[in-house]
Amino acid sequence: MIRFVIALSCLALPVFAAEESISPIDLDAARQQFRAAQEICGRDAGRFWGVSLCGPILLVDPQSRQVVANQQDSEGALKKNGSVFVGSLPASVNISNTPTQWAGVLWTQLIWPLPDDLNRRNTLLAHELFHRIQTRVPIPPQNEVANDHLDTLNGRYLMRLEWRALAAALLCKTPGACRQAVSDALLFRGARYELFPSAAEQERSLELNEGIAEYTGVSLGIETHDARIKAALYDLTAHIGDRTFVRSFAYATGPAYGLLLDKYMPGWKLRLQAGPFLNALLQQATHTSLPWHAYVAAENRAPTYDGVVLRSAEIEREKRRQEILAVNRAKFIDGPVLVIPLHHTNIQFNPQSLQPLEGSGTVYPTMRISAEWGVLQVQNGALLKPDWSAVSVAAPADMGATLKGDGWTLELKPNWKIVPAGRSGDFTLAGPPQ
Image 1: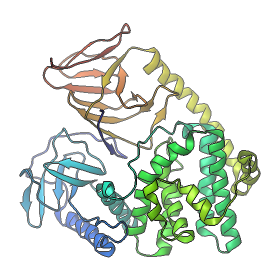
Image 2: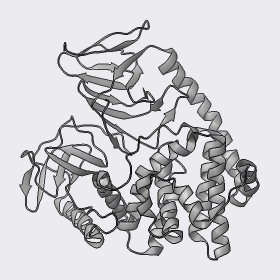
Image 3: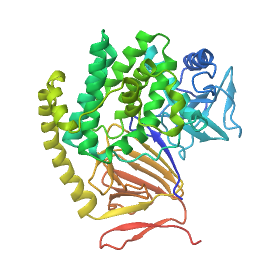
Image 4: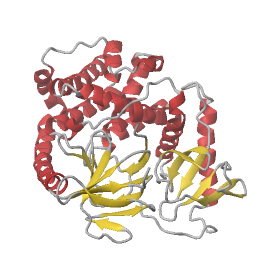
């Protein structure tokens, strides 16, 4: 079985050595963040999910790898400094906003500094606190997939129309306007699923993972209804400029669908144990019927949401996407590569910058992988297979102690080496004798 710890980051994170006695994280500021997390937990008191969000928190400076924690670890890696604990994160542990098992403790890891805006900060805190206890919440584990359709012209166009309709549904003032906006959002989604039959199952997986986490962040991190609506509207616009929607879309749709379901189907979270489609729940709650030919109907409703301008922008983007695909095919499919198998792997990447490569996997412009064979750092693209069984980088240009290639370095552990692979010019890894 292949095991992964996925670390999501909006940063390409360099790694530098630092003196352990000097922390670049202001300890008073760190204590403020810990108090804010405790206040969120205290207000909730475990009512939202039936589980307390309170627990170990690890603040990490990405440049120095210095950390400040709200409690002691189980292995003595941290040293007490007043009411907090300080230390350094080893190179084997990736840095990201994610649950992290280290030094005998499952932490909520957070990249320092946290957002200055208090609502954004509190949303992030509640979002990540939820991820740490997510396995204890009655939502089926999700096997996230590529959502390649969300990098295509029509997939993106219909998603952007859906976002606009969801925003209208959150802002509406009359029952009729609200019902029309909800109907339009469901219609644009239905049209997308009509064009891409596998899209429904793929999108559900990410919405039940990151979408529900972001909904939790908005619901528990923010105290008033109006401020929650404002936060959900922010999420519906914050990702428009993402290079791709394949992994970031659920951060936008999750809070919107969650707040609308709070309105139309109180108690809907109890149904999550069955792993439902959020759009199906909203459709049921609002008694919305979709037309048989959803895409045709969606085109008729698109002008209400400035569809002509949206489609024009997506046509231009599609031209650029085809150019990028040609470069990636030449580099990772036609050219010589180093194929690295993945087992018991920690992967850190930027979810806003992924580039699907039509059946061959997904290109990650930047990523960091730590595994049994060592550490791979990528700054100029790597191709991850659809089943996450292997990652490919351009064939090595330097076979020294630290292997190097086009925008990547690989530090191998003792007794690991690269060897020729099946295709001429390709390489793979060979480990120590079993």
